[in-house]
Image (cartoon, rainbow, N blue to C red; front, side):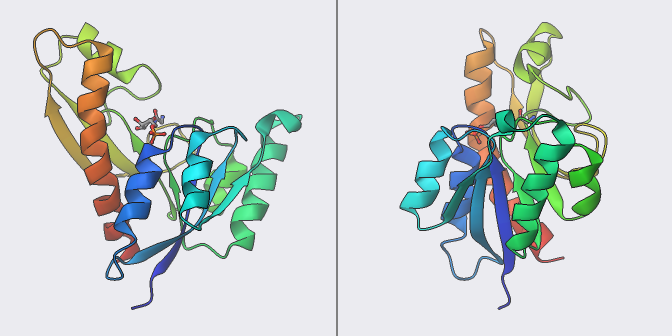
Length: 190
Ligand code: GAR
C-alpha cells in the first residue's frame, strides 16, 4: 500500500498527535507520520515524537517579525518533507494565505466543537453558557477563514448536569482521540 506522508502541527501537549501516531503504527493504516512540528520549542508533544522515532522539529514563532515570515519558514519545512497531508492537532496559530493557499485541500484540523458552532477559542465554556445539551468535536479542511473549511467528520458528546468547561473538555477529548485517526484515514484514502 502506498501510505500518504503526513506531517502533524502542534503547539503543546500533543495528545491528538499521539492518537494519530498510535493509529499509524498499524501497517494497514493508510498514512505514515513523517514529522511533528511545533511553533513552541517546549511543546511536550515533541518529546513523544522523538520517543517514537519521528522527526520532531520546532520553529519558534517568536523569532519572526511577521506572521507571513513565520508561515513561510514553516511552509518551507513542510515542503521539504514532501508531505501529502498536513494535520493540525492543537496548533494554536492563525494562518495566513502563505499556508492556507499552499496546502489548500491537503491540510486538516481538529476543533473542539460541533462546527459550524463555536469557532475560535473557549468552545466548552461557550457551549455551557448557551445551555447546549450536545457538544463535541469536528475535523475539517483548513481554509482561509478560521475554523470554516468543509467538515470531514464530527463526534457528539452529551453535556451532563454539573459539567464545567474542564469536565466537558475531558469528555470531548476522548472522542477527539477516536475521531482524528478515523478522519485522517478517510482523507488519506481519497
Ligand atoms: C484539542 O482539544 C484540540 O481540539 C484543540 O486544542 C486541544 C489540543 O490538545 N484545538 C483547538 O482549539 C484549535 N483551535 P492536544 O495538544 O492534546 O491534542
